Amino acid sequence: MAIRQLSIFVENKKGALKDVLKILAVRGVGLRAMTIADTKDFGILRIIVDDIDGGMKAFEDEEVVYSVTDVVAAECGDHPGGLASILEVLMDADIDIEYTYAFVVESGDRACAILRLSDTEKGEAALYDAGVPLISEDELLRI
Image (tube, rainbow, N blue to C red; front, side, top):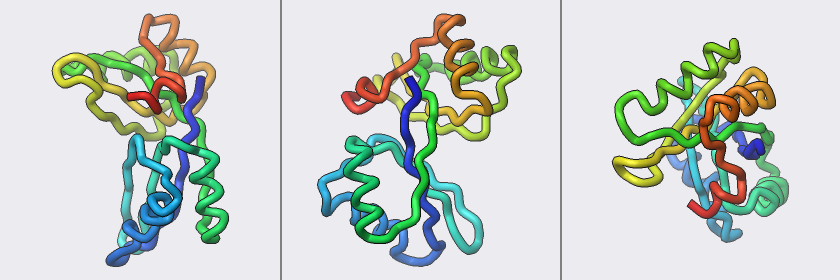
């Protein structure tokens, strides 16, 4: 049930992020979730798009280097401690979290945490066993 995420190195200069996102926009590929971690010289843009194959093709055509990474999308409550409860399940299962980002699905009700885990399959199993709803790629694209 892993979600495929695209990761792209983006030079840390004016207009670089816009240029990468415009490659997708011109092809009609929409963003569903995004985060960027930056350093002085570059950033790592991590995105989930509504057409993964179209996104990959767009980047290949424009010679943009990217990678595809499996991440987990887990539903949590949109309230204080909602994400912490998911992190506790993973900690108890001895699964490391490499990074995470989240967004609200329904204010005051549901949120979605995108998680890059040290062991995707084990993490999904631990969350499932704890009753944490996992969100499939198809479901995520419909949010």
